[in-house]
Amino acid sequence: MNFTRWSARLPGTQRRAAAQTDTTVDPDRRGDGSVPAARAEQLTDEVPPVPAVPAIDGLPVRDVLDRVPALVALVHGPDHRLAYVNDAYVAAFGARDLGARAREALPELDEPGLFPLLDQVQRSGRPRTLKSRKAPDGRSYTFTCTPVTESHNGDGRGVLVFATDVTDHAEAATRLRASERRQRETAVTLQRSLLPQELEEPDDLRVAATYHPGGTEAAVGGDWYDVITLGGGRTALVIGDVMGRGVRAAAVMGQLRTAVRAYARLDLPPHEVLQLLDGLATEIDANQIATCVYAIHDPNEGRLVYASAGHLPILVRDEQGAVQRADEPTGPPLGTGGWIHASGAIPLAPGSTAVLYTDGLVERRNEDLDEGIAALERALSGATGSPQVICDRLVRSAGVTPDHDDDVAVLVLQHPARKGAEAELFRNAALDLLGGVEAAPRARAFASGVLTSWRFPADLHDLGVLATSELVANSLQHGTPPMRLRLRRTDRRLTIEVTDGDDHLPRRRRAEPGDESGRGIAIVATIASNWGSRRTPGGGKAVWCEFVLPKQ
Image 1 (spheres, helix red, strand yellow):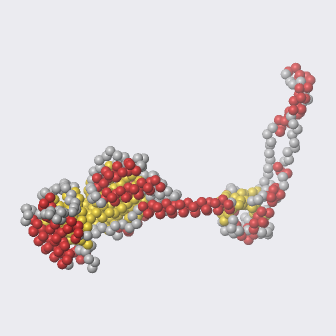
Image 2 (spheres, rainbow, N blue to C red):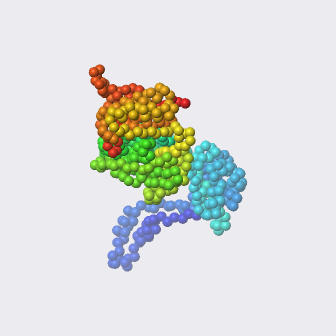
Image 3 (cartoon, helix red, strand yellow):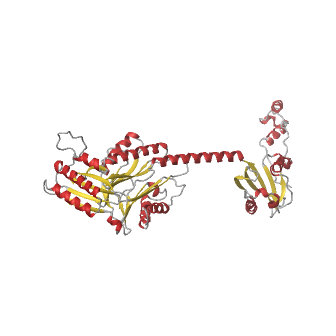
């Protein structure tokens, strides 16, 4: 059987033969510039004799194939009958019956999926390769199937199967993939450890968040989110994205998230928090920038006050399904410096849902960013259910998969529309403090009546009235009009707040035995579960305290 026909022309052979023939010079041509006979003879002596080159057609092909370390088999005909296997094949899988169909004679080729490939090669007349397939002997091979002509007139076709042992390479690749998988798991664990393990649960909001690491390589990202209860019923919500990937981005993210929690405790307006973060980001790494949105929800105002440092707009869906985009104001990313950030507001009425997210959710290489945000708006418009359900729906609608090339962080918050018995657990009452010293007894009477109507136990009623008296007295003595008393209850706590027009924040201090004042805030801090103060946006301040309600 003739596997193939070979021929070769060796460069220079014919030229050397011609040179040897030309050593006999015609005497009649000596005058026309030809080389003299003596010199021609000298040149001929300098050319080494050319050894005889055997014709490739004469090489014993079968002997060559028998000695090849790779596995070789030849099948022929439409039913792939076995015509030949070399010694390496026999050593690997044992002797085979020539003339039998390949499916019976070579069952070890079934598991790697060679039989459909044989049909393809025979029909197309083109070679095909299967890389690194495991055979029943436990070793891995790369199989190459090449069509061959079995006779000179081309009336029969066969397929030469050539299998190279690549077990060492396959095992090395498996170890490498396992190492990369462990590194990625470690990186994702690091990333998740820098995010909040459990979100704080505000009284007036329902919140949920999700994080999906991007890509398959072991490179953590810089996406983060957080929910921070500020006291007095207010909640801070933050989401950000440090540009780039790797441990450095994650380290910067961890420092910024920690700083946000520290600055949030100061109860500053959103734009002031971003100003502080901007300076800190520059100190951490001048070459690393980050985008961020910081927002505050106050249940008494029914809106979300926010500031943005180059981040994507907040989306708010109302109870009817209409989606509003909070576009302005937006400043440059953190770490750029020299920019005065500003705060904006967007309504968040009962029944509304707000979504904060990073660019991995909406940014695609082949799409404009506005198209991604518009698609997210459409998905949010039809999304209902709990915040976690909405998170999952938005991620699915954006086509985020495990091999997504960018990190994705989503934070969803709902301001529920409470009705019936649940609404009775969320109540508000307010009183404008007019006049002079007579405002204090009027405030105590008002607080007593409200707490009685809310059916608080006697001890909590008395503590609430005492705290109201001290806060109002402090405002009357140190504050300026307008003054207002507000009482608010949720299913978890009672909040008492007094606002006035003076922006000087009170502080707790030790009063001397002879002092006639200076004990009010100390009393409030002693009897209340928590207390605090903040400056209000329009000027002035608010001083508040909280009492945790007994569980029913």
